[in-house]
Length: 312
Ligand code: AHR
Image 1 (cartoon, rainbow, N blue to C red):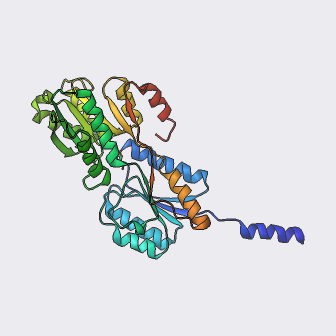
Image 2 (cartoon, rainbow, N blue to C red; image 1 turned 30 degrees about the vertical axis):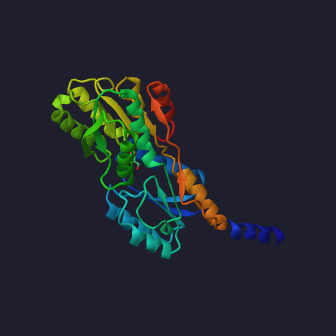
Image 3 (cartoon, helix red, strand yellow; image 1 turned 180 degrees about the vertical axis):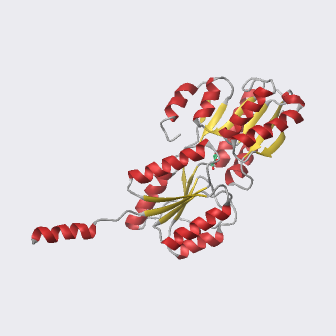
C-alpha cells in the first residue's frame, strides 16, 4: 500500500510539459531558418512542447497565431515580430490572459509592460560596426555606397540603417547614393543590386555595398559578378548575420566583412521563462546578445565549418 501511494504521489506531482507557442516570421533568410531550428532544438532539450506557426512574412498571420495561442491557453508565447508597429491590441489580449510574451530578435513599438522581455542584439550598434569598418577601409578616398535595406518597417531595417549612418558620420567622403529594400531575401538582393549597378554606370561608380543581411549580400554578389565586376575588390561588401554562406564568399574573396547575429535567441528566452514560471522572477526588459565583426582575416573557412553545426 505504501509503495502504491508513493508512486501515486510521484505521478500526481510530475510536472507536465510547458506549452510554448512560437510565432515565427517565415523563412526569408538562412539566419531565420537557423533561428527556427535552434528554437526547436532548445525546446526539445528542455522538454518544452513547442507549437510552431510560420507567418509567411505576414503580420496578420502572426496576429492570428498569437490569438490562437491565447485561446489555447499556452504557458508562454515567443514572437518574432515582422514589423515594429501594430501589436498593441494582441499583446494586451495576451497580457489579459496572463500569458507571458517574449520577443525574439526584432522589437515592437508597444509599451514594454505588454511583454515579459525581448531577446535580441543591439541593432543600431550592428549598423555602426559595419559603417565604422567601411570608414576605416576607405580612409580619405571618396566612396559611393549602395544600401540594401531589410523589410520595410521592421526594427532591424530601421536600426541598421540608422546605425550605419552613425558609423560613417564625420566622413564626408562616404556617401550613400542608392538605398532600397531587398526584404531580407537573396532573390530581391540580387534584383535590387542589378538596378543599382545599372543606375551607377554599370557598377563603376560604386565603391561599397552595405546589406542589412548576408542573404541579400549573397544575391548582390551574384549580380556584381554577372555585371563583370569583382565583388570584394571592385565593390567592397559588408553585411550582417554571419551565416555560413557569407563565410564561403569571404573565403573566396567576394565578401569583406559581416557582423554576427546569433540564431540562438531561444536559449536566453527559455531561461527567462523558466525563472518566471518557477518563482515569478521578472527578467530585464531587454536581454542582449553579442554582435561581433568578422573579416577575411578571421579564418572564414573555419567559421563556415563551425557554423554548419549550429542550426544552419
Ligand atoms: O531580425 C533579424 C533579421 O531577420 C536577420 O538579420 C535577417 O537575416 C532576418 O531575416
